[in-house]
Image (cartoon, rainbow, N blue to C red; front, side):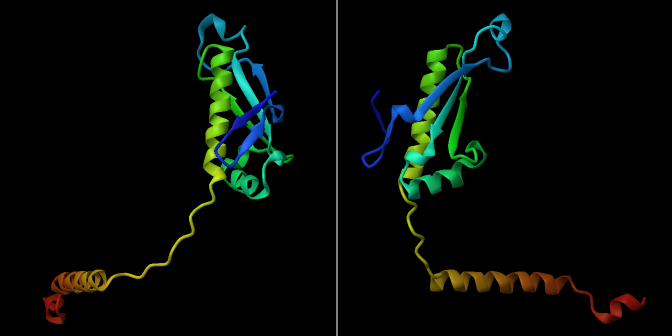
Length: 141
């Protein structure tokens, strides 16, 4: 078996992927109950670099078992091959997403113009509210 290239920094071995075919749920006519076309892809995440694995666990959440196996179900198509390709494509897209570390957030400060605009808006709102208030003498009639 070969390698699947995720991006220029990350490739995965095809041996780390197991695909099993099961019966799909949902509509499909007479075909759905007798043909196992849905692909169930299992990928062992322990083969990944640690920081990539941690980002994947945060993103994939419930799709990763306690043993660190990522499970992807593909049942969009009516053929095994199409669902197999779909499952692998979704795995690659997920890994491409987590392969790049998130860019660090740079702290920024509000501009002088935006601070002035905010304060002016607050003054305007306060003015509107002040005009709604009743004076003490209004309630005694």
